[in-house]
Each structure stands twice: as C-alpha cells, then as structure tokens.
Length: 198
Image (tube, rainbow, N blue to C red; front, side, top):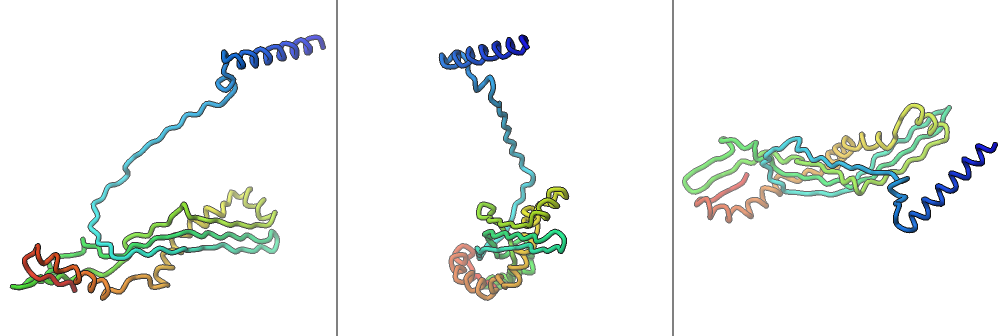
C-alpha cells in the first residue's frame, strides 16, 4: 500500500513539475504528449494524350440515383445520391480522313463525323447522399462490410450515361453544321477558298 502511495505522490510531483516547466515555456507538452503528423503528397502523371476534339455543346444537369431494398426479416435499406454532371458534346476530329475533304476549284467541303458525347464529368463537390436503414439492416451491413454510399457512387456513371441517351441530350447535327458554317468565312480567308461544312 505504501508503494502505491509513493507512486501516486511521485506521479503527482512529476505532473506538477511538467506543468510548471510548461508555464515557463521550458517544456512543450504538445511535443511531449501530442501526436506527430507526417504527410506526403505525390503527383504522378499516369497518362498523357493529345486529343483532337471540337467541343460544340456543354450541358449541365443534376442526376440522381437511388437504392430502395426491403427484407422481410431485416427491414428497409434506402439511399439517394444527387450530383451535378456536365456533358460535353462535339466532334472527334481524329475521325476525319482524306475522304472527309472534298476539294474543287473554288471551295473545300468538309464532311464532318457524327456528333458524340466527348466527356461526362460528375462534380463530386456537389454530391448529396442520403441514407436510411433499419437497425437490423445497419448491423447486417457492418458485419457484411457493405457500404451503401460506395454502391450509390458505383452505379452513378451508368445512370448518368443512360440519362443522357434517354433524354436525348445529343445536339442536332444540323444545328452544329449551321454554327460552323457561320464561322466558315473566317476560315475561308486563311484557306483562300470557300469552306463549307456538311
């Protein structure tokens, strides 16, 4: 019992001494008891490509995807993900070939490739995720290692792509050709011939 009392007294004296030295700025308690953090930032270029696209339309919209599941034994699992997505439509100019250009004495006719989706970019900073589960489902998910938020994010790309096609977001080819032909006189000055897009 005396040993325990001595240990407590010694510990008390050491703590008091440490606080006293800290007050005099002789001892830094943060370095003594705090956590040290080491961070490393690595930037690695995975792939570099030269792209030859003519982007003609940008469409931004909100897309949502949901999960709604029910188990007679465990209860409900519900999740909703809402996120802003930007679609870029235009022309892949790498699909132009020699046959795409028709040249005569006074003009150059450019036969354009099909309009297509060039890029689809979800904006993760706008993501709102709402989840709701019964207690038994939550317990089951913890044991099984199921992550509903991850599941919602995984199915988002396919939902966003399907939405673009179901809502027919693809711009009309005739509209793009008209716009390009409106700009053609500027190009014609450099080419020395009339340029016509088709």
